[in-house]
Length: 194
Image (spheres, rainbow, N blue to C red):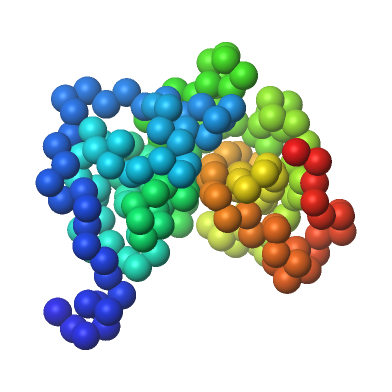
């Protein structure tokens, strides 16, 4: 192994985790949790997912579960800081669509790679900001909706034809940074109403 690969990797805490014989996932949009494990909780509470698929864990501490369609990010103290759910992995083509169910406001909802931007907004309301990055490249073109909450941000990506690509909940909102808002051309005031 080269110096750089050792420098940029971390230990994989999931190495000895045993996957449950049945893994039923539910993402709850009301409290940003997978199976009631929330952002800020210990990652080890999701040990029933088993060993992650990426054998080398980068310093940013992302754990990929390709067949389940999820990536879980953690901080150095193993607290969860990111949930990323894939619906259509058009770039890397590693992740299957998220295999779980969805709950919002105590109701089951259905989302898939066929869900349109308009349908998503009908369920969750208008976003704080919408970024459109369309250059004519079907793979990399995207539309991102940013939803802002106290100490939390949703980034919801759609393909250029407005079909759901991925959903990310993160505890470090990029829109809270003035420089990022300028880069995205945000014209709305900060702080949004929570």
